[in-house]
Image (tube, rainbow, N blue to C red; front, top):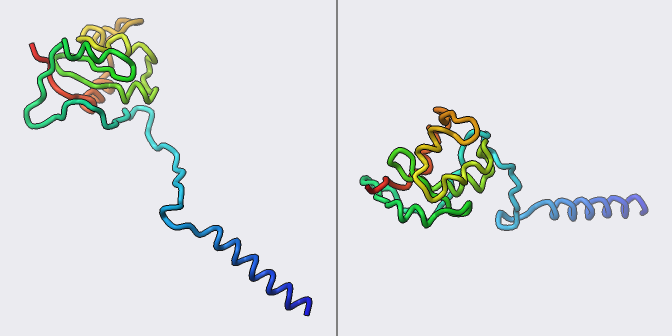
Length: 138
């Protein structure tokens, strides 16, 4: 009789454990690590003008209104970029140096980095199109 009770208890315990492990998709929390190489910029939705076949024309006055780390636009070589998501990611190798360009035409800064005076690499230049939101209006 004890053996029978032990078997029933084991089956009930296994059933409870099994049912606790099964969750519906709505109840399941996905805990996946962020998978992103260090050199890949972060792209997030923003309230930036949408790029279409004809690029949005953006004035320096408009760019100047986006001069904070949370809302950072700048122009480089006639193109306008919203780099706010990149700043938020904390992946800029120059840390806060990127903030010096917020709200400005940052062409000179981009081509002659503060600190060492060298131009940004081709790798850095290849990231820019990811953040382009328009072209600088003259």
